[in-house]
Image 1 (cartoon, rainbow, N blue to C red):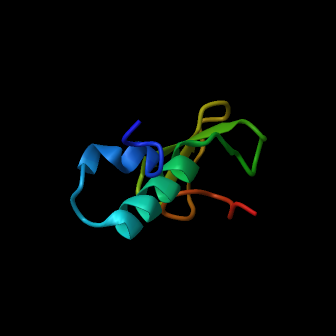
Image 2: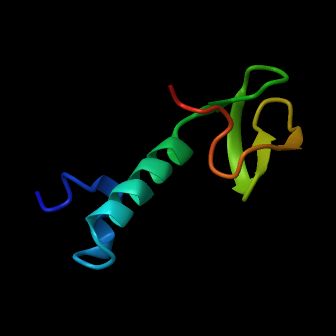
Amino acid sequence: MRTKKVKSAGRFGARYGKRVRTKTAQVESTQKKKQECPFCKGTVKRVNTGIWECKKCNKKFAGHAYYLKKEE
């Protein structure tokens, strides 16, 4: 269980320091979560940095770089 603390950033091994790997894992976990389309409430997929596409209504729109809504 070497990657329990840093989750998906465990692929970096012992490099870059714990704080950087922890923040990377946090961003990646919110990025991979299912996001909701603001137009039709369908599922949105990240196409590129800040570009999102809805699977249901096929709309492309701009938003935040890694996730649409801030996790609370």
